[in-house]
Length: 493
Image (tube, rainbow, N blue to C red):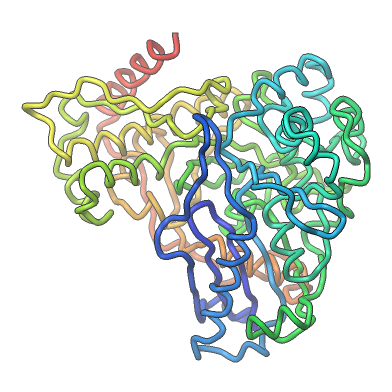
């Protein structure tokens, strides 16, 4: 039995097919080859076209099915992972009404702040585990206020993965996990957050049919299957946001287990069974993939918008002449501290852990007679990891005290230097695994379709490929972080 996973990322769409028996990846494809465009008409705005996601998904599926590495008729289920918090709205004919306002768009910050005051702090933290913030419900409220003619045509509100599933199956569904991403789930009542719906004056019909994450969300339509080279009526049996899905792919399912990722954005994701939220909403709590009325499973998420994206920016502004591997090698040749150069990696929308401030990225103490591109590369990695440390300290304030963090050997964690900085600046060992969002989605599909007996069965071949732990230079790393923190505090004051 084969399983197909789709990862709807900000930069590209990736599709992988795995063998359900041993978890082996038999084929993968990605489109586009270069990072996809983010539309930004104004500072702090970020949009992408859902139709483009579907075109890239179709091209990736067709490419992987024509690889010759497997028989597409052996695919038993499809799973979807997707960039969280994006807003997709369609009319009664399932036609997209506007570009998706994606996760790093900051236009609805003020809208969410007003809702937090209007709904009340006690209600928001007890029932939503979050401030409404700059999440999907607030994005839709912004559309309602500023684009009423579009809002009036809206029949269904979806997240990016729901849209891809709709294109595959013709069905529109959601889940408690997805609704919690949009701050539309009431954890006290176990239902749609009626008070949020009333406050924003949203009609009830815009919420799709609610199903568990692990369930059949529709069957691939015959005409779609034919165009993609798939057999028809394959179940789409799993949909999850990229960070819950990343945790799933690392077998982070139980309270106390913690995952990290450092792609376009950076995340630490901790699972707990406590219905609690950060009083300042600097970190956010969502329903994990295995959350149910019988099993409280909450993912506490720290997000840093600017991680891999600033690393890419550094490559671009230095002439795009180095590969990431070359950048990592050059950075590793520079001593700790980058000879006084510091980078604040914030410049990709409002940073929740900084109180939703829309601060730009900053370089400090740049010396033109000393610093070369290698210093920029090193200082960028140091700045990103210092931001992780800053966020992890917030998680520790909220009772998250990791003894080990699991991460995929991908994106920034491909850099030995980044991994070294991460374990030393956070003071926490890291287990590295071969993992991938599309592979995680494929595993989720197997669980949702009942191909695996349970999650433990899905991960019986799951083993770490590397281990990193702090060295004996804690004082030097503490000094680096104290310098960086002082710069940040001054910038925020």
